[in-house]
Length: 287
View (cartoon, rainbow, N blue to C red):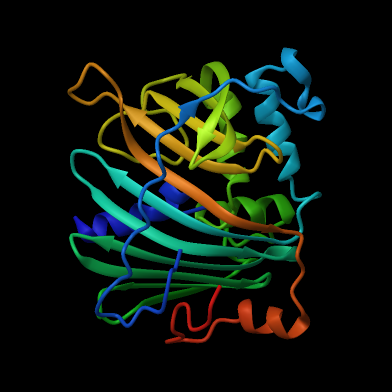
């Protein structure tokens, strides 16, 4: 089950699913405590968000537009994911650094039944290296050229982004872009999450289990997205399912924290961040 859960991670994270400290290969840092539950609280949205007549779909589309690649060339965010369903329970934490032209560094640490695993993906825009290691076993390393990564054809920008998304490296926009067609009966309300003002957008899946990037045993019936009330940054997304209960329960929770947008790296930082070195220690420096 550990190996199966680990292999499913990119699909769950979707660009996303942080390392909170150095990993020695023998133990993992404790998972961050889940955020306090959403507390509904009525407050007026900023005028530039559409005013009182704005719809949930309009807010969602605005959040997607804010994260579009033509607006965001650089992105860094910490990622925390918790999953609990009938067959799989694990926590994962890591970070994602994106740069222009397909440059990526994605580090993830997974803890399942007390056993740590590691995922590292590095891309310089031409080559992508993927390293997976379960506990202290020998790593599995795969390298691909973007020119041959998909059916041996040169890939354009859109195809490259789709490939990175399948690897879990696209960031939160890849999840958000799927929601308008995956969800129905969208509604929103304002409130607090971790004492911060947010907008909760909630919708039902068009088909049971039809939510993107949620490979769970219990079918997903509902998605809840929490946007920062000022910037519309997606702070948290949750997948809910009913299972054997009449009421839905949370199956998957993904947080995107401490976002840094359009803060360019220096050439030296780019070389260090977007170059793959075998046996490179995760989180060998503060992030």
